[in-house]
Length: 379
Length: 224
Image (cartoon, rainbow over all chains, first blue to last red; front, side):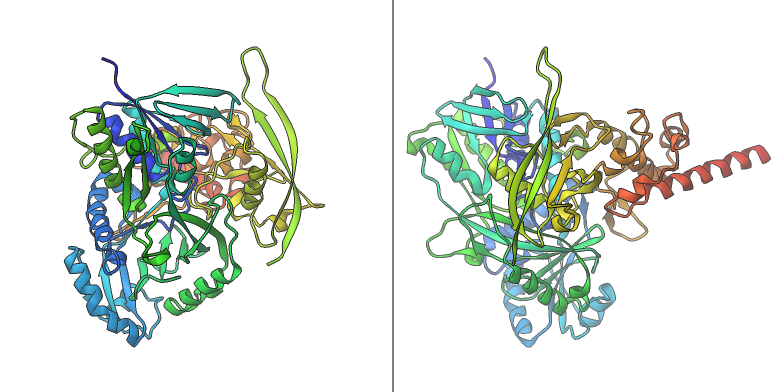
């Protein structure tokens, strides 16, 4: 019997992790991407390996997933993470009053926290606002989203998956995708048993090609990168998730993030000038002098958030959802929406479980304990 | 925010089809972008006009190293090069990096560089502190494109690889690569690598320092 063939659309962290998961389970996998790896939401993200603390109050399910994956990823890609921890800092009475709620929510989601004094925090991070009132240490870290994705692709390829970058999906129907290869200009038709739509904020466009309705909230965020490393750890404001409340140090730079507003077209996100000012203002409050450091780059990306009539933007869940489009008349067509790069492996496990159930394949997921190969093997 | 027009002239290359030679030509795009925007923003605007255009991009803040190209004839990362800082007579010219095989348009094949780097260095270096820090080098290939020696031989390890090797000289295999015929002695001291490096790695300084260390160890061996 020939192996079932799965086409995964989108080489962001989600699609790459799905290709890795299914290749490990012995399926024939083709991963297609219209640009290179991580060219969309994944590549533009803030590079924060979440401890889960950020979402503990507002979104306990995502928080718990982040906390679990954080520990798993430390074992799978130890050489690709900066394990520098993070601090939630209180700079005002308002922040202090949030402390109790925050610590309780972290405890409920089993997220380790350690309260430290202002003096201790300033010893760890001398650049912080000296008016600091209190700090909580958490297990945040830093990754490189591009190489994070390449590691999944490298490992998937080693296990037989085929990766086709610069390949655009131009038609989708049951058991068949038509691809346009940008380098050669040719169109090729692929027969397959299953199609997984992991195109992030572009997923509705792929679904539309198959005549399937799929909606999400493309919520854009602006990030500004400063040309200096301001801190060793990830610095968060001890407050409900808001605009410009995180500084992530990466290499010799610092990434300030992020804002949040709804956009129509994830391919064209004009950057509102006032957003950059807002980021700099808050960074200046957290680390005095930050706003005088030259800006190295400014970027915006669309988060593919789940559409929820009750909540938009900040309030929308950072969780994810898998869709089986059999109910829409296209058996063997699946979509996955939402999530975080930190939880990409877990998202892939859930999506791949559904795909394997559909194909009546009983091989269990092995990504939890399979170390990932060097990103360089996918370059 | 002021929106301003500019012309992008892009060197476009298609891979050779059987029986044909590689086709390469200039194509001009008229785009309008905010005055503080970067070359990558201009390139994305061009792509919205012609989706066949091939270029790599991911992080947009000089961390992934995937948007390296030649901008106005000089190696740079498109994501951190402000477009109106480099514009000349309303035009910005974009070409692929040199000394790499071209996959299409501005996309080059970095696999040989990746293999060389894999032989000599780790991704995250554990420094004296308890935590590892990401290496400054983002493996973008700008130094290889600018290097006059890399232009003559694809076997030469090249600036980024030698700079990475400097941290691993206690490994005998790395040491013998550095001392070997494709190692530090091939460098012509043009210092172009340090000139174009977007991450302050200073590969040329690393190469000179490796040479000095190797000479000192030879003299010591002879002295004994």
